[in-house]
Length: 187
Image 1 (cartoon, rainbow, N blue to C red):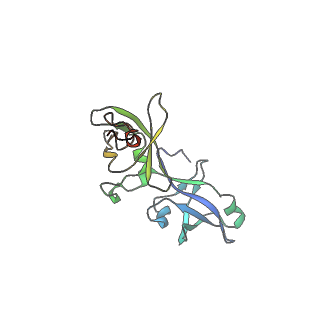
Image 2: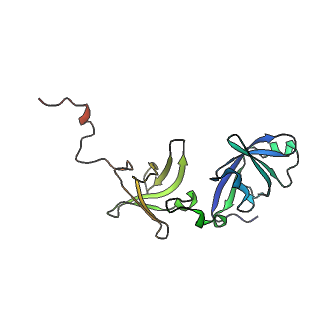
Image 3: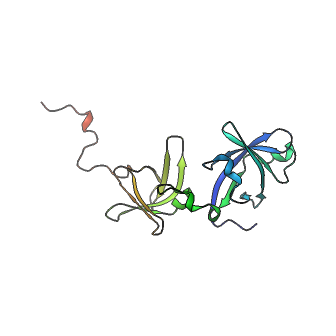
């Protein structure tokens, strides 16, 4: 298999399910059972997987892949990440304010004055909402919330996104002393 140009993570294989080669998969598709709807899935090591059957279970989907016919073969796949080529995903299904994570990576974060805060190098969700990782030249990566208050506009064609540096936590309000709330008020 040739390397994917723009891989999008669709799911991660967990443990085996039963004795006939089925596996539990944590699906990252909005509809978890759609994991196989966009063509074959690919592992980083070059293997390709064809989904034969998908059914929902609690927090995961149970998947049967072509050629994985017993528990041993299924157990050998544990932890494997499965990708699909970005071009296989349909843009017309997205709402105006929806984006694929893969489309956000590489965007330059600019404020209204055109000052750059770096480019998006990752998108994470640790359970409390999406975070964008920004990395600028010579700077340590920073995480900003991916909310309508901190990311005001996304222009995929220009490769940029407009951020509010204050709402994103990239700058402090210079006029306000951040420790003032802890100081006793003058009488």
